[in-house]
Length: 74
Image (cartoon, rainbow, N blue to C red):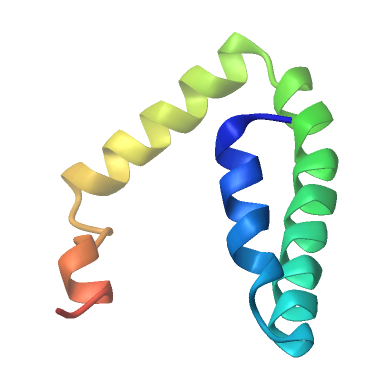
């Protein structure tokens, strides 16, 4: 276990059980999601990545995207 993970667990242990369970639930969901995506990313070819990047560049150039500032208003 890493030192950073030890620090996080130490802080979590001090929280009420309800908050501990909420954090554990989110962490488990994130880990399960990562496990689903890892094989998909690994199976993506360079050509597929290149096509996706080209699509994104086209969307940006044509104004089809918005800045994060408009999505996450400060």
